[in-house]
Length: 47
Image (cartoon, rainbow, N blue to C red; front, side, top):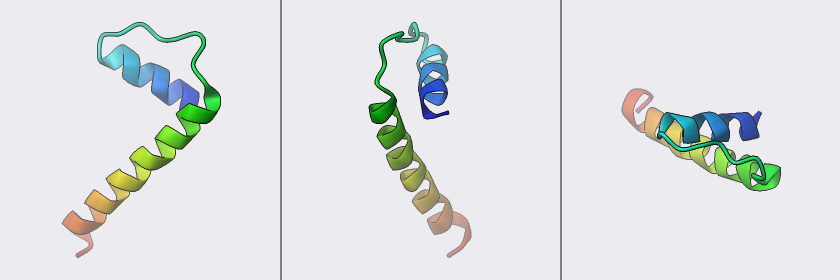
């Protein structure tokens, strides 16, 4: 799922999807991104 999200994000930025993207890098990047988004959400709404 992280790889699909990464490809959609690239296409949203106007870039072509990479066919050789690493699933591990995509997963780690997605986890970091979600952690940052969750932290921002909690600071804004749950605090």
